[in-house]
Structure formats: C-alpha cells, structure tokens
Image (cartoon, rainbow, N blue to C red; front, side):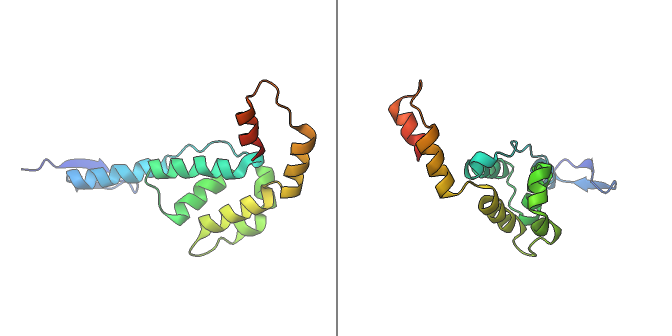
Amino acid sequence: MKQLVFSEMALGTMTKLNDNERLADLAVVQSLHVHLPPFSPNSSSTWFLQVEAHFRLRQNTSQQTRHWHLVSCLPPDVADDLADILASPHPSHPYDTLKAAIISRKSESEHSRLQQLITATELGDRRPSQLLRRMR
C-alpha cells in the first residue's frame, strides 16, 4: 500500500500526493530556487556556462523560467541596455533571445580584446600556458 501524504501546493490548496507526485513537486520547487552567479560583462560567455550549469543541475528546461531567472539577476545598467528585449520577450524563445542580446551587446569586440591583449598582457606570476589560455 502506497503511503499518501498531504502537501501544501503553491496555490494554498491541500492535495493528496503519492510518492511519484511528491518527487515531481519537489523537482518543480528545486527548479524555481536557483542562485545564479553575479553577471560578469568581461566574460559573458563564461558566465553563461555557469548559468546554464545551474539550470541543468535544477533540471530547468523552460525557456520562460530561464528567461525570468536571467532577468532577475541582471544589474540595473545591463537591464537598461536591454530594455527593448526585456519589454517584449520573444514568445517562444525568450531565454535564447535574451542570451544572444546580452552576448552581442555586452561582450567586448574582437578589436578591443586584441588591443587589450597587446597593451595590458603580462606574464606576471602565471605560467606561459596560463597566459596563452587567457589570451585565447
């Protein structure tokens, strides 16, 4: 005989749940609770790798949920730069559209990255292989 438990749902109603439903309910709650790393405009591609790792760990695959998590962690100056995208999210791919806009608008251009490498790159206390990775 399966044990039934009572769980208070987000709407405040009491519902009988079996073990499978409880696990599904727990997965939904876990996917809603995501702590994203602070936005890093100097390495937005790397930042997105971290963000998407958080989403995968929480089994968050919804475009809308990912979009709203992303919006909630953007600094105000970045959100201002993306106001047109934020005001009217893409109906079927809001996360992918916002991600592409962030990368294209907030990432350094190839020219400025090259200029910075030429003028500001020093070996310092790094190994040559570390410097090479940084330069790439």
